[in-house]
Length: 94
Image 1: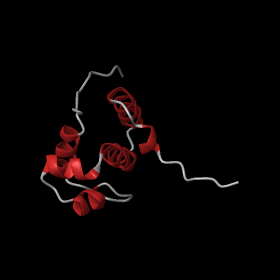
Image 2: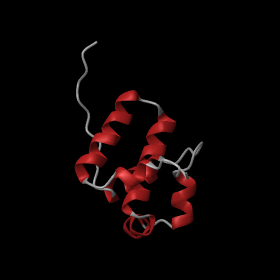
Image 3: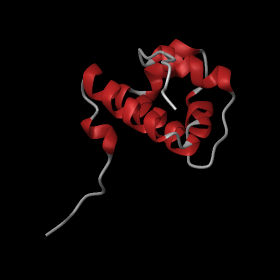
Image 4: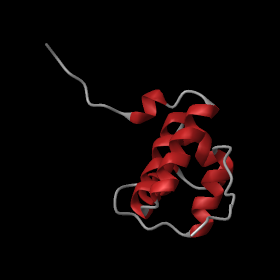
């Protein structure tokens, strides 16, 4: 019996699934997890396509969205736009 490594990118196959995944990670508020999630989504869509839409190279994207990376905010915004996402702020009750 062989097993394969679980890859969330294999399951991010619709805009709705991508939005739900990213919103769940955003709610948790962990910066590293958010960067990783954006990387998973970019991988699911295709790094070549994301690279073309952002004007960034594929190696730069892999580096910016890897574990432990601290990408610039501008990079995150470019990738979010390329994956069809946006940031929205809602008031929270304290």
